[in-house]
Image 1 (cartoon, one colour):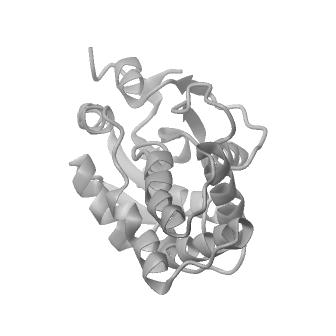
Image 2 (tube, rainbow, N blue to C red):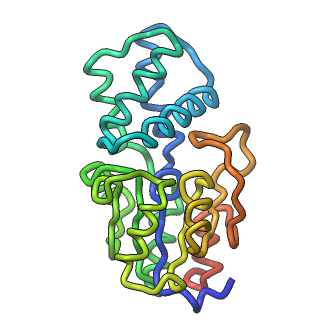
Image 3 (cartoon, one colour):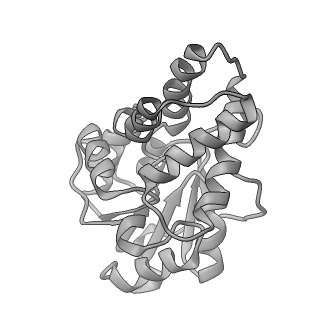
Length: 232
């Protein structure tokens, strides 16, 4: 991959820059314990992934509302009813999901050469909390709230192309999720970099299975910055 061709890098946030698997499970655990319910790490992520994909494929609703409905559906499967307070706490938990340890430094390095863009399935206010954790100013932030749909809808990637301020061939989309990002970006003709954050971990995490062939892949964000020549 010739990085000289690219003017800007667009990033998925949750799963790529922010460790959403840790965040999701950490937010769910105390709720399950309060209801004396147990479920394995991978089972919880799978339940989350199936529920999220189903809800986001329907009419647009805020990500806070999506998270509330996900928790309600997990409750249906595991036979407990979350309280109103638990629904509210889970829907706000995104603000506390941790950043991957290499994200901030790698983004700062990449920003010396490229314009950085966020394309995320999230509400504006939830992302601003994550941006503070990352400690990076992005050139553009495009959220599901602004676009009115969720990835993997091609509408989100069309919005990226229209508003990135660069020709389509000058955009490299960087993401962990094959389902939400790599497959649809490839379908619309955007170059893709898969960040294999799961490193062969069992299961699919919080996403659905899909066939997708990224243009290139790296194991983490620091490796991307090294590959792009912005970190030693």
